[in-house]
Image 1 (tube, helix red, strand yellow):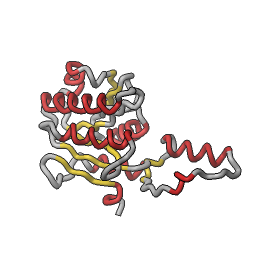
Image 2: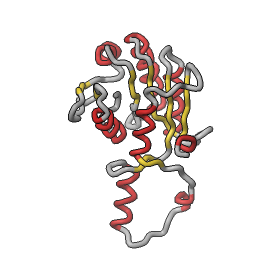
Image 3: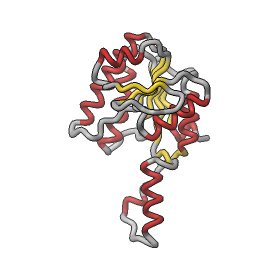
Length: 200
C-alpha cells in the first residue's frame, strides 16, 4: 500500500487487515495502522522503495504530488520509477486509483490519467479504477460538505455547483479496490473500471 496515510489509503489498509491480508503500509511518514506494518518510504528513492516492496505480490498505488508546482511532471516520474521498482521485485499486479474523464480540462485530473498511463507502460500489469468524488466520513469532499451545511443556513450557490458529478461511497470504493487484487483484466496491460461501470 503506497500512500497509506491518505484517506483512501488508511481505509483500504484497515479493510485489507480485516480481510486477513498481510499489509505493508508505506508513506513518507510511517503509518500507524493496527495490524499493518508501517514503513517510512520516499517513492522517489528507488533503493528503499524496492526494499519495501520485496516479497509483496500486489501493490496499491495512491500517490499524489499536488503540493509541488510541477506536480504533473513529478507524478509521472514517480509512477515510472514505481513501475520499474515493481518489476524489479516481481510484483504480479499494481492497482491504481485514478480520476474520471475522457479528456479532462483540470490539471489534477489530467495528471491522474497520465499516472495511469505511466504505470501501464511498465512491465507489471495494472488495474486502474477511476473515481470522481469519494464520499465518506473523513474524506475532504465529505468534510467540506458537512462544514458548509453546519455553518451556513443558506447560501448563494456559484455556477459551478450545477456541474454533474458521479460520487461514490468510500465503502464501495474500498470493496472495488480489494476485488481488483484478483480481477481478470480485459487487457494484459491495463484494465480500466470507472465508477460509472462498476456501480451498476
